[in-house]
Image (cartoon, rainbow, N blue to C red):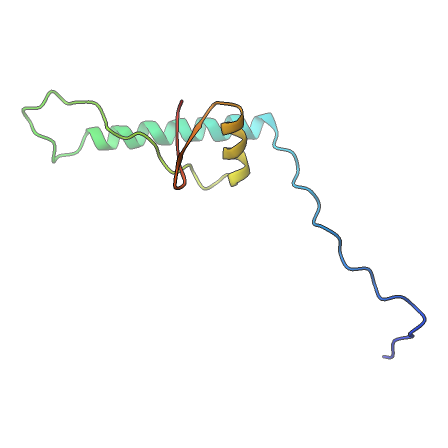
Length: 96
């Protein structure tokens, strides 16, 4: 196949299409998944066998968690912008 020099080369694809806007349903689902994981993580830490049987069963010291990976980072960033989550650094988020 030969290329005719008088025809322009095919156009290079422009920037990828902008990511579709994040719907409120996705944000709600992600936030609920985050709260559930936070709750389960705290419960798991509080129910450790290694805790002293003489302790009063103190509260969990877990301040933040890595969010569920079923949702893209843009979802978590949007929840931070809305003030529903707080970025704690190094990929961890917490409830404000």
